[in-house]
Length: 338
Image 1 (cartoon, rainbow, N blue to C red):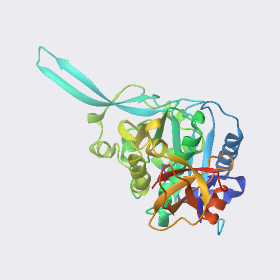
Image 2 (tube, rainbow, N blue to C red; image 1 turned 90 degrees about the vertical axis):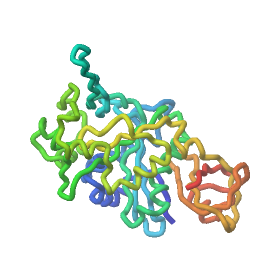
Image 3 (cartoon, rainbow, N blue to C red; image 1 turned 60 degrees about the vertical axis):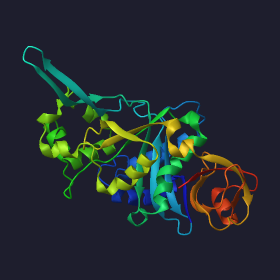
Image 4 (cartoon, rainbow, N blue to C red; image 1 turned 30 degrees about the vertical axis):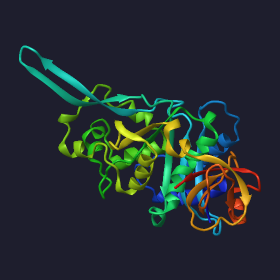
């Protein structure tokens, strides 16, 4: 059985393996043992903390095969993006250049460096093993953290943002970085992402141009990849779009990938999930897959299972499923359809 739960220090070696296999642009999963250790320690402290508003907390979850103890995926949440330093993005804007006497009226697409998204909660660190990408476990890995947010709304902001890895080729070259960032830093896209993963994006972002970048002046190769998604993360992009996230306004300052944004209350897994009391019994036949989670903090658990459930009624959970969730007869679980 595959179950999502908070990461523990004993997971470090397995988390490192996931990080090695993750795409270059997933800077929240650096291939560095010390950084990953710090990430798990900070997450553990966040789960244990008494919190009444979104602050510097970060939550890191792993998908564990309970039979083997191996990890098959991970995902995370930062309670408040840019809590200790600005969270930078490029904002898509339109400038108007007009001259009445010459009869000219031009609308020009520009990118403006901003930190509009500072203070939003941030979904990070998504990765799942290749053989599970097309399965319901990808939904579980991405959306179980949304069920956690639904259970603990006081810990998170009223809006959520996600940075999706942008396009880079088989040689890890990013046309957008080459056209923009590389002019200010004598390093490759891969090196810039590595440094920002180990340290922070802020110190690089603050050296980026603070004046608008006129998009028509960029090479066609850079313009064409703005807002494009790296094939390796298309699965999570599609999941989040179905959840109600929008892509229109912001892109990543390094690779030009889309920055998704949504009101927390409007996210599908939060708005449509429901609480139901547990009845220990066989689930029945003719059901459909549901994501199911308990309402705990340090002992949070979530899984995907087939259920024949009628909203407003108790939910029948087989004993093995209830045990994996750490719930008993009469306890409440949160459910949302896959």
